[in-house]
Length: 288
Image: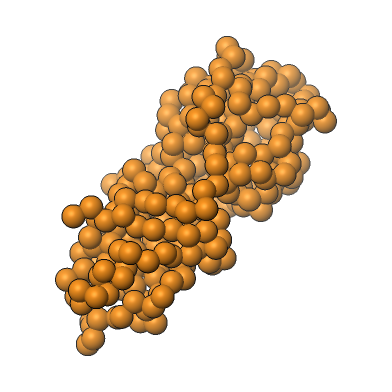
């Protein structure tokens, strides 16, 4: 019982809720970039919220399946087909043995999630099926999926119909506002720089992946004579680099860093950033 990848897309990996309690070993949490979307896809097919599924980035994938099963897609909106017949992703999709499922043009968002009823029979590493490509660890052979890969299914089955709530449909806003907290090194910045940091727009550059997002904005004044030892780095930490630009640590980021952290995104807001597109305006609303 398996699915066979025909087209993998730009960057498609197996992810689950992530691996925790290993930061002291230098191992990132990893897991879903957009946890809310992943949980919804799993819910639609009756899986546990944190169960392993497929995360699809920017371009869609296609696969053949050799068993009757139900699947669901959430997060980024893609056009989808079963055997060249277009299907809607606002409901559970029922597949039969020998069917070909295909994702086409991306319409909204960046990252989509495809859950299979019963999940995948992939060995967990440090308690998680999540793929960490920078370490060749977890998921399917520690890498992004490729054409020809055969992913074993755990307990494939059909489930009752489930309609996705209309308000869960991804939209790409022109402005993205996320809540944050003052960072550990905020006291190193002068009041003008802090006010600037909390009030200006940041724009996502093309240099963005699961490890981190490089942002572009009016440069922030870097602290004078600054020198700090590397310290713990959480996903969502906004680090200021010596040129006054910023790097936002994401879910696969290293566990330590040496740049000052002016703010840290609330963990329940990270899912919003997973669907951000280059050049989109991002504002950080800091709760004080």
